[in-house]
Image (cartoon, rainbow, N blue to C red):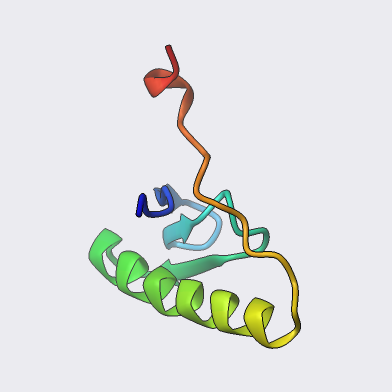
Length: 71
């Protein structure tokens, strides 16, 4: 199975790195380093998927691709 795309970027406003998963609305995390943000968003992803499953909500298939990879 293909996994979800993760964006990681530095936020001046937050003073650290933000990681988000575009296919999972609201699924994001903060870290002081890119690696920490990645670890935290993996935890958030698992929590997001478990919550959706418990509530009987649909789980989107991975589909997001950054513009630079779209052909």
